[in-house]
Image (cartoon, rainbow over all chains, first blue to last red):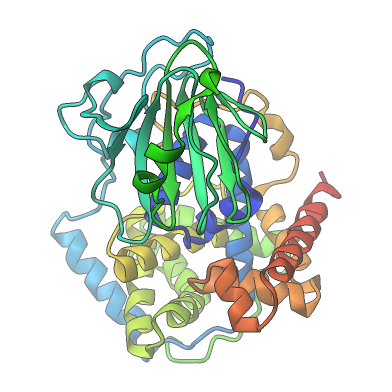
Length: 234
Length: 196
């Protein structure tokens, strides 16, 4: 995978500090699974978090707090209650072949975990038509602040020129699109601020599937019927 | 000893930082109580201050600091000194507990055993400087930051502030927050690269 577009440093820093919305965090963790470059950067930001922790004015603990903690830990030990972090088995959700050649075989864990249990490939996703050539699937069980959805865009279809109220990030899962910023392929992230307008177009002969996270709801339903049109029909 | 005010400065050199890492390893391998007591004395008051910034309540902060230290005990075997310094790792434990308690959800992380994980083809680049030394360098660079940049970094990590909230809080334009952060990150990173 040849990733060219990454979340901004500020987004990665917010991921490390734990101040992203869950929607954004999901997208960043999915990208990071595919991107050692961003994992490294996040480790750097976590090191900064550790440095802020070291430099902070400490608050003294109450009397006997260590004894209290030790006593509780002892009780645990006698109960053989040591935490082992065993994650449930990884679910495999196939992505399928892509004509661009750049693709992931299956979905990274952070995303795979949030899809309905009966989904084993992208084709199983219960897509809902949003507009001609555009289908969406809204992911559930996400904090109310922000939204996260999968979009499936037919070849040659363009998403209307839209600004953003708040922060929007797009992760390409399959296929590719092109916009004012450049060409995006599987694994790439478009990390857009509220002041950016862009108009992505699915630019190859295959459908384009992407994950879109926002901090503020997008007004797609209102915009799409009016503005959406096949790129080559303009 | 537990009730005394811990105003000890943080690890000032890699030797001190390495000591903290060794304590965590001792806790993991031999359930070393003395090592845990040392970790507790150093980190619990800091984690309490961290939690206080988010919760605003000394009692909750105390309880969460105790819980975080219990997690340090329970998860010590997951600590990898080649991947993180002690302060870095304990920061992530505290951060995850904070999100769990205050936002009632898990922090979404990369699973290192995920078969879709793409590994670094050039991992050597980062290993010239050890993790402990790296943490000490970042800490030193942080202390050197001009006050206006430092406060933006601190608010980013120690309060649930988006950049626009930081701007509001400090009564400065959003663009200024962003440029100060950019400058600060440049310096913090520059400090590291100077050595590597």
